[in-house]
Structure formats: structure tokens, C-alpha cells
Length: 137
Image (cartoon, rainbow, N blue to C red; front, side, top):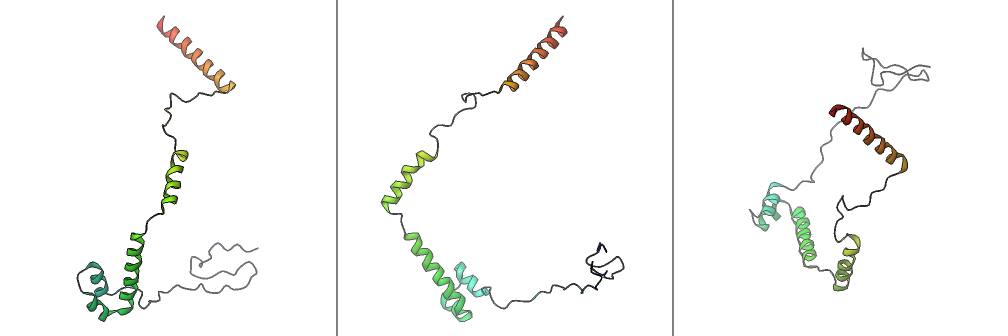
């Protein structure tokens, strides 16, 4: 069996054969392909910032201006939407059930110890008491 320790190529740059003994294909290289469009032009960005008029931006790129116009209209429509009263009442009624009214402090929580933990704690307190008693003599 041939171990392929250098899948990208050996220290000298040569490609080793794979486990079947056949020569490997050279690895494909990635290349950057520029994409056309997709970004609003400077005038459209300035129109969105309120620096130029809509007509100026439309002359530059009408497609992007139409897109942002529809986005603005949809945003304004959704801003005016309100939750129906029955749904709002159901949401508000469910909040107290989901969250406790008053958080419980750590000293008020019930303490549950298993028998081995209680015996280990008692033994540790006994050893500490013996050590302190021998130091205070």
C-alpha cells in the first residue's frame, strides 16, 4: 500500500501515485471570476443616503432604484402593521407562565445531598476540626 503523505505534491513538487498506483491528476487551481453588476452604483448609494435626487439616480441605474423603491415601500407597509388585539392579549397572557415572577435566591433553594456526599463532607469537617485542635494546643 502506498501512503500518500503529500496530497498536494512532494517536497520536490512532484506528485506521488495514489494507492492504486495510478498517476494523480494535477490539482485544479481556483481563480477569481469577476461578477458583473450586483452592487449599487455610487449614485444609487448617494440617493439612499439622501444626497442626490431620485431622478439623478434613475439615470444611472433604474433597475437598482426600482429595487430599493420596492424595498422602501414594503418597509413602510410593515411599519404600519400592528398585531391584532386578540393575538396581543394571548401573547401578554402567556408571558407570566413562561417566566417566574420572583427569582429564587441561592440560599432559599432546597439543598439536596446524596449519602456519599454527606459522609464525605462530615469526614472533611472532622479532619479540619482535628487539625485545628492540634494547632491550638
